[in-house]
Length: 484
View 1 (cartoon, rainbow, N blue to C red):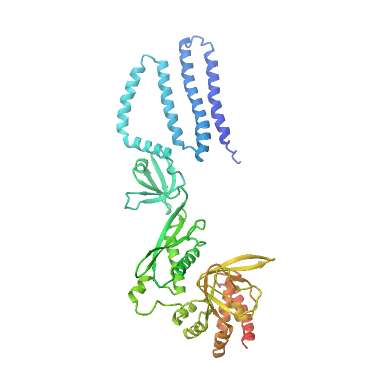
View 2 (spheres, rainbow, N blue to C red):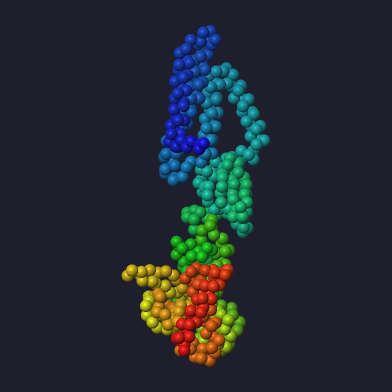
């Protein structure tokens, strides 16, 4: 049988308030009853008074918790009052009520009882000093509200020493339970927490800022460098280890020197969800990739190898051949063929918002992105929809180049872009020289289309092999018609 739902917090609070009221009524009825010789009238009054003390304290405690702690303070601070605070108020009230009751029942012995309890309290306090220190530190932690359950914190041994970090799972009477990303639990005494340096990565918000500094040659125009670095970091936003997309990425010139310009990249991550080292690794990978595509080396390379010539420019044949060799479309081709394709490519530059190709047109150029980024826009029932983004290292237009198909999408520059275009005439010249290039191009084109249109990650299994073979033959027939 399914268990019955627990009563709501409001019903539970009303129940705890009603119980002391019911007890007060019962005590009143008891005090009016005939003891029939069992108790004297004086003891009945004492017992009733003692019960009234405990019941009135319970009623006042429940009203204080509901109206002050939960309703007023909970609404003002937007978080529930810690249970440890209520427990301490309850214990203090019980002790005070007990002292009052003892004074009512044994007025002549109360002095001796208090003296004895004081001596016992001193002895117990000295013996349990560490435990008491942990308890009061835990209370102070709750009252300070510097962190709460669910926050990602790092506890440092000292300013210059790294500590241990994790999510706060529980804050108990004596200890704080911290869960690390490895799934382990750190049980830290509250007294240690109260004397340690703590970084709370969840306050005032869950995002933490980090910085990356790098040096580029002075020959590179700063506007171009800033744009390239911005694009490189933006390319990691949707990656699992990338920076938080909600926060703005900042790139600026930090310092100017004779041999280099120092650039600073600022980004934000959620330390509770992402690894700092993982995000830094992913961003460095993207920056290195975009610098290689743009032909921009780091300043150290230029300083150590500088001669009278300028830095390596992307227009040089060896650098272009290296980029074209990484393209999926030209996989398997000889270095000589790839170098000829790169040599006959033409550089094109576009400003932000410029249209590179238009959906439905029948031109025949293919484009390789060296710098910047573009949006892939598709016309859906008269409305433009951005379906994808492309950045440095991507290419587009290969279907129109090789199969004479109309453009399936509009490509629009989302920032200043530098592209290399490859014409059909250049590819036809190569095919006329070496006919073995044609089947290789058709196979690479078929695999790229399967990966793009059908979201196929790997070509495993007989069905996928048959699909690839069939598409390869169809594309080959089309390409034979185009290139004679």
